[in-house]
Image (cartoon, rainbow, N blue to C red; front, top):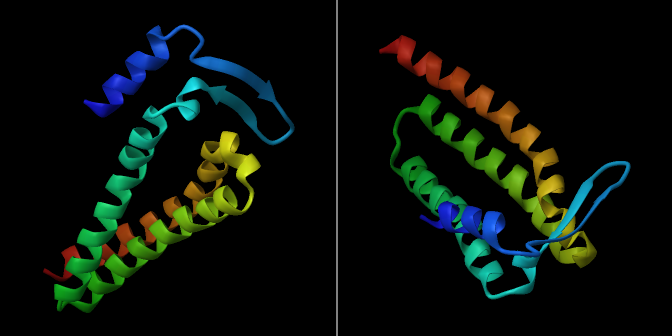
Length: 130
């Protein structure tokens, strides 16, 4: 429901897009979302699932006996941190990046993709052993 609500806000709220600019490295879009109470709800939605995912992954890692599965979980967990932490550091250290956070975040997502491929390879090895 949350993505639907935010999508409807973007589609039907007049003035939702305040400003947009193309720069050499980023497309910057300033939205009304970041100037309201909804920004906190969106932040909770955006990062809440990532935090829950990390929690359940860490819990599974601790219970798992199979070393290949543990390695796979560790790669996925590391990829999540590699993807998230640098972007958050930039967001906190350089608040002016607030408006281009998604663009910065996408750059780190490439690293996540590489780690996901490694995890899929390890998972495939696990399946072949069974």
